[in-house]
Image 1 (cartoon, rainbow, N blue to C red):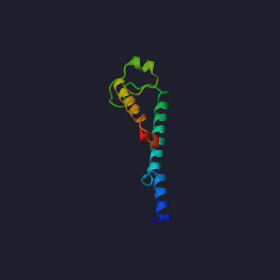
Image 2: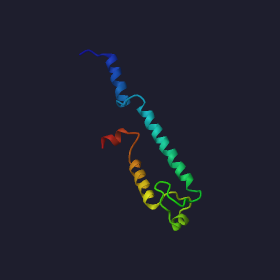
Image 3: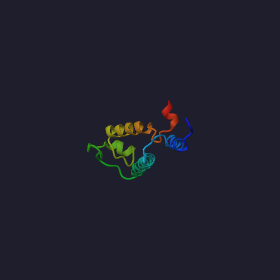
Image 4: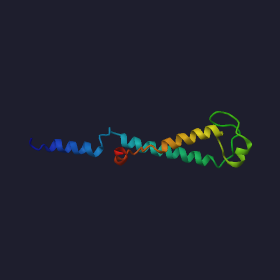
Length: 103
């Protein structure tokens, strides 16, 4: 079969992009940035006054918890759920490096 420079170039482009749809890489970058901004906002809020009731479920936050964790906004149950969600999301490689895909 003769060499087809147009086919070869198209294949190189497809291989370089990893067969990702247009805009997918930017969406991954945007998601990563948005997650980091949300996390920073949560951490900034930790320095203010503690809430008396959980901002997620509305249950009272015990006084001892408010004393020990300045700026606390969640009850123990909701905080545990938020930590678990963050832990699961933290293990997800949004950049989808080829090394992680090969494992």
